Image (cartoon, rainbow, N blue to C red; front, side, top):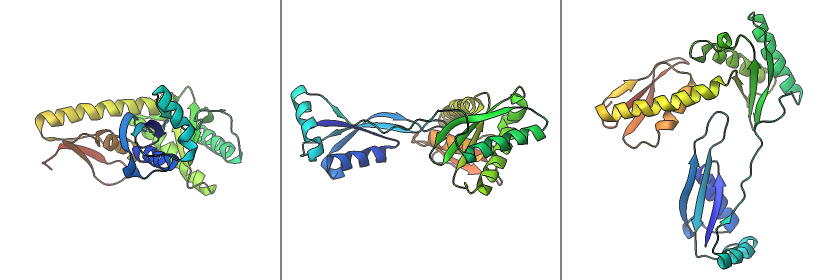
Length: 242
């Protein structure tokens, strides 16, 4: 019998399968069907197929019988959370955050309107609409990072230190993420061909983590951060050299 399960990670999908089927993890074989990398505005997504000849829990027995008759795959519907929703502030905290960021950029001498971009558990995305977006972004996004840092400090003072504030404007974060992924793969190819190492430009913690995560599954390439302070450099090197 074949069943399908989904989760944000492979482990989560397998844990779902074991719990829903009422089986131990050693009682079934797992086939990875689909893997989507986690990004700034999207959660990771893994879909697996579970192959087993064991008797599953009663909750699944009826569906298992139908699957056997039709030789079909039984799929567990994933639990999804709506990410993008109403852009207006929905509570006092969101109202304070949008007002704070608007006031901050106004004190910088630039006008703009701030709205809610997305809501997730322990994460709130805010969007800045401004004719001065390029200035607010700054070189390599450093101005936007600085504004975001201040917004997170303010959120902590509101008793929301466990909520991460993400600021974006003109879809810079998404464009930057796509650019970094392409860069990571390009550099990895160069490193594998030359069997040397390449040191990338200084990056903030999120950008560095994206490089590390992107290249994590390439068996003969490794990465490490070098330097001090917030903006460190990532070194991509061929395994066997340092």
